[in-house]
Image 1 (cartoon, helix red, strand yellow):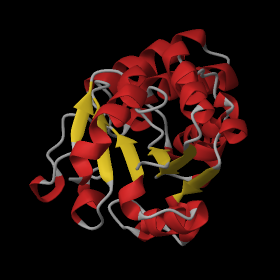
Image 2 (cartoon, one colour; image 1 turned 180 degrees about the vertical axis):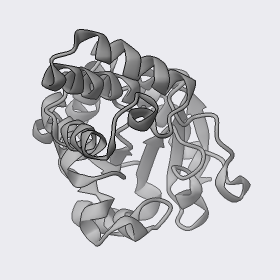
Image 3 (cartoon, helix red, strand yellow; image 1 turned 30 degrees about the vertical axis):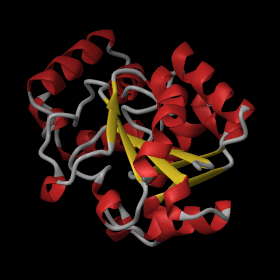
Length: 220
């Protein structure tokens, strides 16, 4: 029986592109240039690499942009289907968690802005475990989450979107994995070692019913 549902953050609970837009707006505001937002966003859409350099900024200005982006308080919100899903899972007694990669300051700001710090039972930002070596697919965060929740691995579900790292855990431990087809920034990558999700859904709103209907089949 599934007892815990653990989520990725970016492009699973909240579209990463909204955070990107928020960061570019913060930079534009800091430079007092309303048109800078559109410039940065258009450059990002063309190519995610070296956006500030391609915008014509020098070294010190690039450093300023990076610092603003990483530390700004994001203007982002959870969509209603995510709110409803989390409330439903909580109502039915599932333990809820987050395992997310990324720089701690940025991820914490996202989590707090979305109010996820108030509704999750436990949150792990993998970099806080000791650096980027603990990012997925490293299993350390899942091992910690299992102990904190006092459940077995086959009583956990991990919900993510990124084929390059979110589902490989299913080849290490018997954790059911669910892929949300969110059309996010990194959803077009290749599966790590061809390890795919256990199941996939088109919307996070399908999670509760999907778990109820399929956990018996999965464990068999």
